[in-house]
Length: 170
Length: 170
DNA sequence: ATTTAATTGACAGTATACTGACAATATGGC
DNA sequence: GCCATATTGTCAGTATACTGTCAATTAAAT
Image (cartoon, rainbow over all chains, first blue to last red; front, side, top):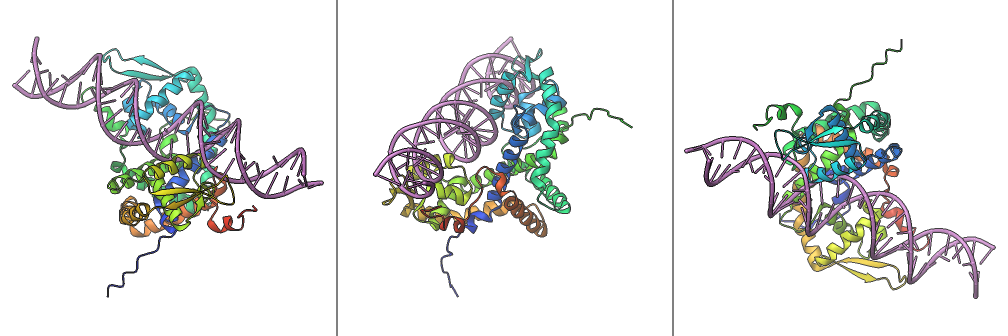
């Protein structure tokens, strides 16, 4: 029986869509980060870049982009700002004239050490409203989902291991 | 015993942070939306605005911003683009010279009807990798978390009900 | 009624994101 | 060694986001 009434559009078409909910949570996450870390002149993206340069001294922009799964074009501007704040320096690679290698400055290492507790506080705050067991569940499912959808994003995450053996010859 | 070795910074400071995971999922969600809906000239934000104008004909920009929890400044540009594509029209409010009321055009209503299946497909795809029970759990926790953190975002969601009795006198 | 408050849409400035292109450089096949 | 190809950083163009400000207008206080 083709009882095909046209489905009326309701706000559920927005409110129950996972994409909408992920957008909202991302905005909430940024707001909490900025609030907790306002004493330090760092955005969430700049923080992630700084951590990665700290753990991978001498990384180049393209590899950095792969390790945190951020767009290469965007990262150019992020790097510029970190450099302007004198948290990092760029040195030309001796063996490849195209590449510029990234290193933390003393100020960059210092701000990274100082900001950590505030970052942790912000990350804790955004899950705080849930019961501890639910926090664990959500974090686990979210981690799985990001991993399983890795190839769906324009810039899939390529862990450090996957990059190492690429080296100069990948 | 103050065995205070300085904690070494690892990439876990990024990879396990919920804020980082929400950012990744948001980017994946947008990528899937754009891929599924590339036949229609609409972004996720424009889609949400269009749905809301459809269910609230004659809404103004400020209320629209509250109903979908998007920034009012940003929404100005979104509305301009929807208007340029002739999916909506703006009419001055008779009783308040500041306000411009928003309405769908025929083309806007048509594109909204046509795009729905593709939007649904994109929303389904981003949870697809999880088992059905886990999808339900994640969606439930995510919905709760967004709701419980509502006030933490700069533009908290104010549902239609909360706006109605504001009317001209809130 | 007049001063004061708040609201609305707009704008400028900064920071992500993504697309597509580009010159300089490096690598591979031959 | 030469040529096709790939990589790197950069840039222009578009689209969210947020901060702060502003003029026009409306509402509230008294």
